Image (spheres, chains in turn blue, green):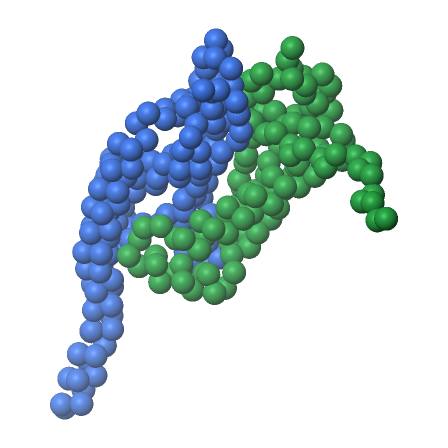
Amino acid sequence: MNGDAVAMLVGLVLQFGVPVALIALGYFAGREAERRHYASIQEREARFLRLPAVPTKAWDTTRAVAEARLVCGSVVVSADYFKRLLAALRNLIGGRMRAYESLLDRARREAVLRLKEQCPDAHLIVNLRIETSTIASRNRQNGVSCVELTAYGTAIRYQE
Amino acid sequence: MNLPPPILSAPPAPILITNIESIPGKRVVEHYGLVAGNTVRAKHVGRDIMASLKNLVGGELKGYTELLQEARAEATQRMVAQAAALGANAILNVRYATSSVAQGASELFAYGTAVRVENAA
C-alpha cells in the first residue's frame, strides 16, 4: 500500500516535476540574464555612439581614408524553457511572440556591438549587413536548436 | 664575410577586403572575377552537451559562437588564398552566407570579386 503511494508520487514528480522545474529555472535565470544583458548592451551602445554603423555605402569623400577593412561580429543564442513554453502557447492562438522578439533584438544588438568592438578607432561602418540563420538541431525532439546573428560591414578610418 | 642574401621579392602585402564596390583612396587596375571559399562544420559532441545544458536557461551559446567564427574565418581564408593565387591584392564586395546542409551541420560561404588596386594618383 505504502510502497504503491510512494511509487506513484515518484512517478508524478518525474512526470511533472522536471518540466515545471525547468520552466521555473528558465523563467528566473532567463529573466535575470536578459535584464543584465540589456543593461550591458545599453552601456556599450552609449560608449559607441560616435561610431555609427549604417547600411548605406556613402562616406565623406572630401576626407582622405587611411584604412578600409571588412569587420564582422556574431552571436549564437537560444531561448530558455520558459520562453519556449510561451511560444508553444502563442502558437495556439497566433499573434506576436514577444518572448522571442526580445531574444532576437538583443542578439542582433550584441552582434552589432561586437562588430564595433573590432574597430574602435574607425570613424564609420558602411554597408552594414545583418544576417540571421538557424542552426538545425541534430534530432528534432530534444536537439539544441539555435539562431546565429551575424553583422558585417566595412570599417572606414579617415586620415587625421 | 657573411652577407645576408639579397631580397629577391618583398613579402606579399596583406589582401585588402571590403564589402563595398571600391577601396577608398585606391583605384582598380585589374579584375580577376569571382573568388569564393567555403567550409562545412558539424557541431562537436562535447560542445553539444555544454550547449544543451546552456539551452535550459537560454542566452548565448559561446561554444557555437566560437565555432561559427572559426568557420567563417576559415572560409574567408580560403577565399583569400584563391585571390592571392590569381595575383590579386584586394577583394571587393564580399558577402557571407550561411546554410544548414544537414542536421547539426552548417555551411559557411564567403565570396567576392578579386581585383588588383593601386594608389589613386
